Structure formats: C-alpha cells, structure tokens
Length: 246
Ligand code: FPP
Image 1 (cartoon, helix red, strand yellow):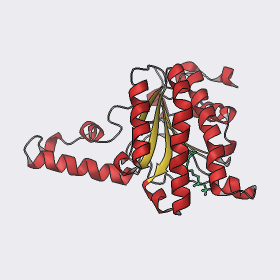
Image 2: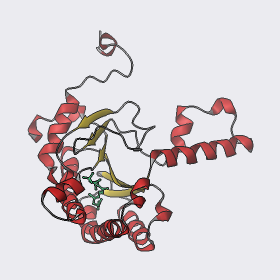
Image 3: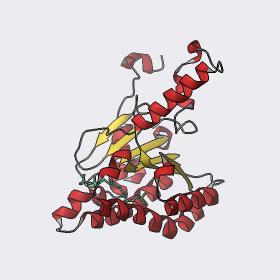
C-alpha cells in the first residue's frame, strides 16, 4: 500500500488521538494498563511508518490534562510506561534520525518523567528526520488561555499594540510555535471528537476517524489513512475551480 502514496501530496504534520486502549483491553478481559502497553507497539509502528513515507512531524496525544482525573493506579501506570518506553526506545529513535519534542504542562509531570524527556530531547535535538511530538499533560484550552495571558501582558506593558494581534502572533504564543499546523488528524476507536486537542492548530485540518482501537492500529492503517487524505480536496474556504491552475 505504501507504493500508492504520492510523495508530493503528503501532509507535513499528522496529529493522532490514540483512543481505545481501555476498550481493547476490556474486550480481552485484561486491565486497562495492558491496553496501554499494547498501545506502545502501535506507537512504534506509526513512528516507523511516518519516517518511512517522509512525514516531517507526528504529534501523539499521549496524556491530556483531563487524564489526571483517572484512577491513580492508571495515571501511575501510564507515567511508568512513558518512562520505560523512553528508556528502551530513545537510542533507536536517535539512530533513525528522529527528533523528540514535547508539548504540554510538562512541569506537572513526575520528576523522573521530566528528567527522561529532557535527556531524550537533548540527545535527539540535532536530528533532521521525523520530529515526534508527544503531547503530555496537554489541553488546547490550557494552551490558548496561556497564550491569551501572555498577549494581554505584552499589550499592557506596551510591547505590542492591539492591532498587532493576528493569526501569526497567536501562533507564536502557542506551544507549537516552532511547528507547522497539522494538515491531517487521525482519531482511532470510533469517537468523533477533538477532545481539547490542538483546537487552534486544527482549524483547516482534514479529520479522519476509524473504528480500529489504537492497539490494533498498524502501519497499514496509517498508510490507508494517508491515502484517504490524498484523495480529498482541501479548499480552505474557496471553491473547487479557484484551486485548479487555469
Ligand atoms: C486512550 O485510550 C489512550 C491514552 C489516554 C494513553 C495513550 C498512551 C499510550 C498509547 C502509551 C504511552 C505512549 C507513549 C508515547 C510512550 P483510553 O484509555 O482512553 O481508551 P478507552 O477510551 O477505550 O478507555
């Protein structure tokens, strides 16, 4: 299927809401953490798949601000899984020229996670292949509120004027200021929601929903999704004829 993908029509940035780990585990009479553990295998597949086709940025929604409200054992288990996965995978990511980046309220994570993430970012910072962005303790409303506060402060202090506030300026104050907006967003496991993920950045993104639970999502599912994206016409509010060269 990878042969059908047109290199010149790739999204630069794919964002994924990895949903359905819990349901996948329940269907197998296993606990939720087992689902998350299996989900890590899908993360590996999708990272490899993105690197193979030449995607520049992949953002994975790994832990939302709202996820802190889950049972403590699950939160702890997810944090431990994050640390152990970083430990075991970071060399491989580095060898494959992948750069790791993180968005979200990182300070709220356990110290050991922060340490691992900092080490992984530092090790891979000069890599030039795929940038893998982990959204951790992230929510779009949190990010937008922070941006508004910073812009309000700068306005009050006279650093900027009200008329300077535009799309570019707002983008500069988001945690993705150094990353292009995703053209394509995938959500697994049948829910048709954005769930507080990259609300500003997804304004013109194509959305793709699949019933496949995240632990079953494989490279072939990713390639199928990319092919679906390539068959869409992105109009950005214009009409079809305006997009075609005369
Ligand atoms: C959503 O499924 C998944 C999560 C909240 C966590 C995702 C985490 C991983 C795949 C593993 C860690 C990731 C990395 C990058 C090492 P859910 O629990 O909401 O599933 P449900 O809706 O079926 O209950």
